[in-house]
Amino acid sequence: AAAVANSDYSPGQKVTIEFSFYNVETNLRMANWVKAQYEKVFNKTTEYDGVDVEFEVLLDPLAKDQFSSATKAGDIDMCFTGMSGATFQATFGMGFIFSRSFSSFLIGRGHNEGNLPVTAELIYLHDLLVQKQLEEPDKLEEHEIAFLEAVDENGVFTGTFDELFNLFAETANFNLNYLGQQEDLTNLTAALEKALLEQGICVPLFSATSAAVLQDKVIRMAPAYSLFMGWGGLTYTHIRAE
Image (cartoon, rainbow, N blue to C red; front, side):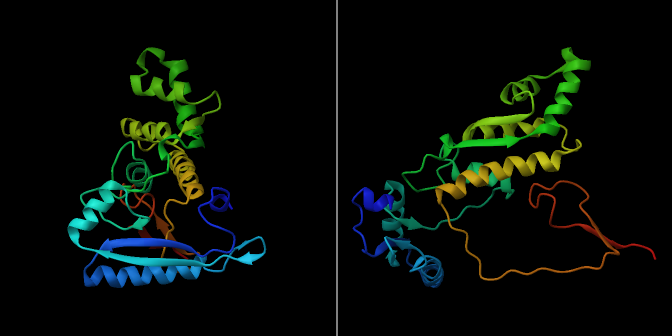
């Protein structure tokens, strides 16, 4: 509807998006898979004025130099790229990868991720610091004072995507084992994720998923918070004695 209102498309016109990629065989296989998945998800699955919207991904294989120039100039509709040497942790990844304030990894133009409005309840860390402020006000450190100034009296943060991510970045200075840390990080991560999903910057794709059902006598415990897996991943598993 917005595209029609902006005269980018006329009612009933097929929506086409170019998928640009470095032209090698492995990338071509991946591009064909992405094309099939996107068209399955979006083609004729929504309506405008009672008419099914047609959607097509056009593949745009480019030589290495062409692809590099196009992405740097933002002369693309959609592409894929990669990164290495990073710590893959959900909260860090969303801020570092998707906000152009911190990284050029997100090539796309037209999104204003850093200024997206977000709200997150961080009540456990707030309560911990308020208690410290009451009992030992002289021992409050600079980053702790900054945190209390960033949230309201109930521990609720309201601000921008970048501001919340910066607040998260400072949590490395806090004790990572405080009671309720998991919920605080979950709320913070959910706030960033909600903002990104509403923008539709990236559509997550997957080809399979699986789950396991364990008996109630099987106990799984996360020994500590992991930057790589959060509270998941490798866990201790043991059987409760009968």
